[in-house]
Amino acid sequence: MKKFSLERNVFIEGYINDLVKWYNTLDLFILNSKSEGMPTVVLEAMSIGLPVIATDSGGTIEAIEKNWTYRFGDWERLKDLILKIYSMTPEERERIGMLNRKRVTEKFNIRKNSLKIMKILMSFVENQS
Image (tube, one colour):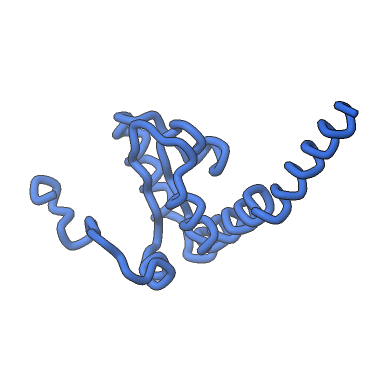
């Protein structure tokens, strides 16, 4: 980080006791991962109402809009996305965060998804009879 003079702006956290409190200290959440399933941290950050930038791997592409993803190793695209977020007004960033919150609560709602799974299972059982 010293090479790029980022030590006052970028923090690499270890274990975090209070995730909600920690997420609420952030302006932006970035997941730079080469391989993922469905990353819980992305859903958590979105549910808090943060703008999220992430690699387009695994389930991440189901969670966030494509225009906020980049291919792992494409540092130019990552830089552009970060600059895009920080060139926005606080109100625009908040709007993106609220859209993320809405998206995660609608698309990844455990109650709604459990009901969908139950309907599928019941349909399967009825068709087996």
